[in-house]
Amino acid sequence: MPRYRDDPPAVRVYTVCDESRYLIVRNVPALGCGEELLKLFSTYGDIEECKPMDAEECEAYTDVYWIKFRLVCKKKIG
Image 1 (cartoon, one colour):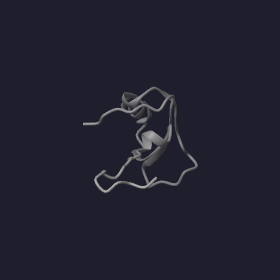
Image 2 (cartoon, rainbow, N blue to C red):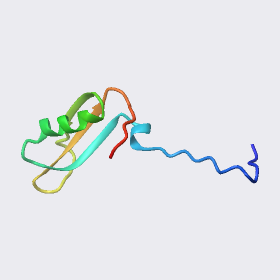
Image 3 (tube, helix red, strand yellow):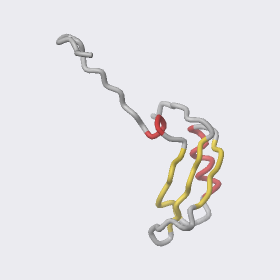
């Protein structure tokens, strides 16, 4: 559909929250921070699963975590 000259362009911004329930968090200190990470990210929605990705390559002394949210919800940050 053609746009009229006076109409502003239609813009839609997508974020990770709009597109996926899954999140990969890298460079988490390898100090057993899994519970703290779960607590931190649960402020953005209910978490169905949170587990370390042992097979994933990462920097020395860091871990990679895989987080699956139950539902995708939008929350204003800041």
